[in-house]
Image (cartoon, rainbow, N blue to C red; front, side, top):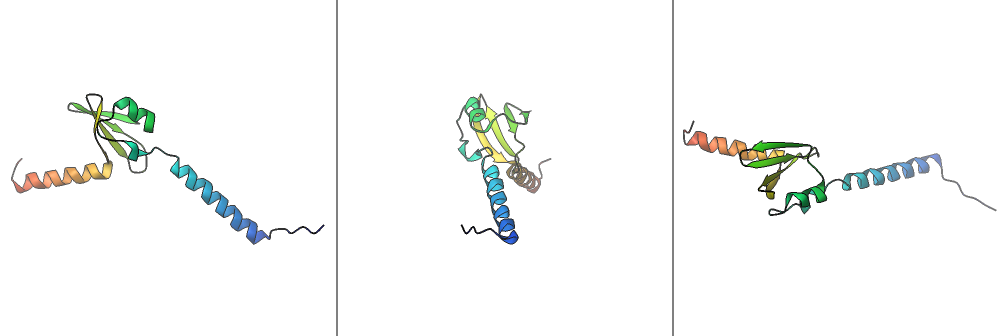
Length: 107
């Protein structure tokens, strides 16, 4: 019986490919923030992406803060999703608002 064996280099490459595939799948298995839509009930949000890492009360709304790489924020008002965005989006909106206020000389 003639058996063929992989060379060390081939095994190394195969190992790298398998490890990459496993890591890629692990990255995909995180919360699907694209499933969040305005108007959803907060219980639906928890079912789809889990509970937030932190909750901040911001006036009449609650900001649900998640610890994912993009730092998603789900804005809940009256038990309903009012908005969802990333921390980078929130920072950009704040800068634009402050710049607009500065240009109007509002203090």
